[in-house]
Length: 136
Image 1 (tube, one colour):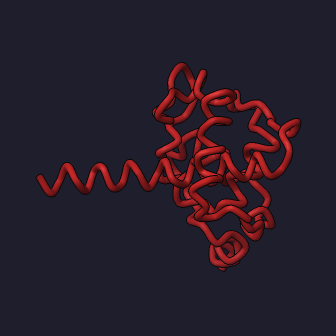
Image 2 (cartoon, helix red, strand yellow):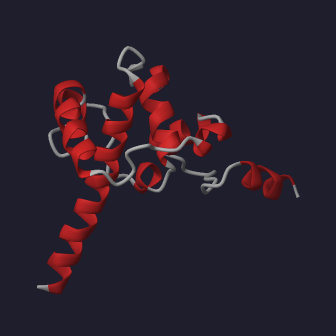
């Protein structure tokens, strides 16, 4: 019963044993963040602007392709890619200091949403490249 109540409070999967840092960070985000709506959800211009911001602010730790370098996480992680955009927005804005992720609250919200849009596209591009590799 308690587990079902917890799951209902969070629309994305709960993970317990063997949680990675990414999964723990996602679980720490307030459930209300999942309700935040990305105003640029599928906008290509926003994704391109988000890529520029990503390369300027994020690639030093996460790599040019989001693969994660140093101790930074791989941004293609299913725990991140399957999270609602509002969760990613919250993580960008507030950071995860225990996990080494700084808060980017100094960036205006529209720019944070552009980065979220790019991150979601990053996951889609890896999925499609893997599909192409399987088809060959």
